[in-house]
Length: 266
Image (cartoon, rainbow, N blue to C red; front, side):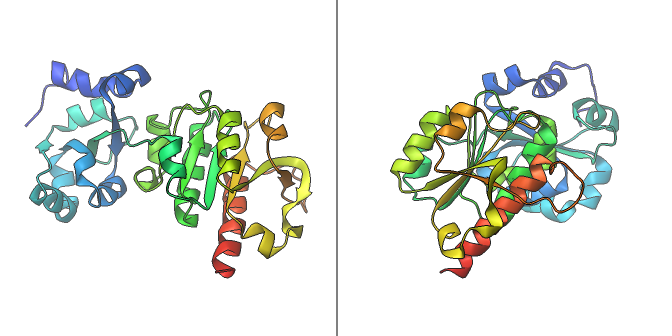
């Protein structure tokens, strides 16, 4: 059992809560049972798993399955778990996982039909929600500008509820360059803005085409340079008194509208 929270090994794990350490090692922390269940599909991504005695009993089935696949699993004390966890109430299981982002060229070679681009998205919860929504909508990838929050930030990872393992992520991507390449691949690009065309007025046939959505910063929206390179600017209608929708919710609606149109038009 790993039971000394002051050991160098524990300190190394704790360092993965810092961005510099994550990119030095190519590893990040994935916490909780939902992430473990998703990892069953890709055990090669796992470096090791740390689990408390109580969590061993609670999640024995999935942990035993991972062990049978050759995944290294080590029991730790509650004190060590509290040290390596990023939450106030640890769920008792933390996996050390290899980075899984891909390059834009590799993504486009697979002929994607639904993409989400994030322009200066700074809120971890919003990014996590968008990744989760992209997963549920069957999107092919999420593409992040260099000034967006780190996708391996523990708060982002946790808020994806395991979806980070299912949706390809392109990180540190110049979005003007990305949009140019995406359009060259035959994919239309919609920029999301409160002053754009009402997206509910777009025909199903038009929405069903291969589409990339660009979602902007929580406070300032999509930057003008990025918006100018999109094919069209779209908005969601507001029927009540709210000025706007939360970014994560707005992105989810836009992705679902497109996904429904694409699936309906098959």
